[in-house]
Length: 286
Image 1 (cartoon, one colour):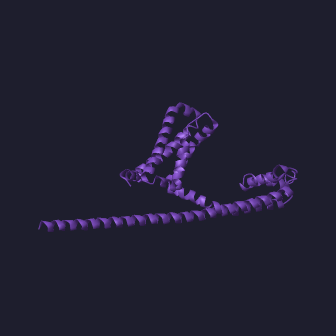
Image 2 (cartoon, one colour):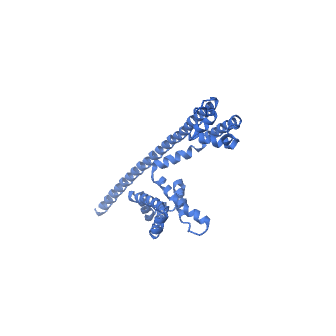
Image 3 (cartoon, rainbow, N blue to C red):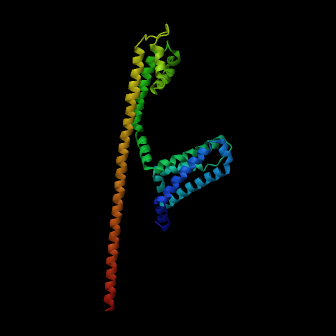
């Protein structure tokens, strides 16, 4: 590595540099937030455009410095998925503004710069990594939920469709209704249509209990058991991610320790070599 690469690597690892990038991400979030207010955006348009370009400039500079820090192998920068994530976000921000709808949509994607906070905080990276790792396992849980929805929707259409065609008139309406029930939003109103009879003298009597069993069993299985399965899968993935992170940190410390030992050995050998050179000079003088 040349001196520029060494200097760039030290700069990237410096606390002030990381604090500056973090501050720029927060500033970017504030700028984009202000732009959602038409009055403020028009009033401070010049300042906001200047800050936007300044933030993009620093983000591009950050990537260039990190590439330089890789020395003769700049492509190693892209070996880290989080670096690729940063690079894509910055590349999207560099798309020029235009009058077409396509470019307008890409410019709106500037809000993705806020997601760079994920790469700043290791804990956030751990959570996102755990979520990504849990996707394969969650696929089976989603399949189980799909089967549950399908079975209960069919039962609902045949058993409740005639009395309540709005919610259980056909399969897709029944599945949408069950999704609303699973969120626990207004599910009692839907259930009351089927368990309560007509109003008589200002009172309503329960005429059937089996709809209660239908809705309550769906909520217990769907909202309680299967949702806990989701949580369990994610927690398991987080534990695995924490173990991997601890292993990586241990490896890094071990490498640093080996580097220190190697440095000491080199210094000792140089000292021994200097002593031998001095002894040789002294013997020649004699």
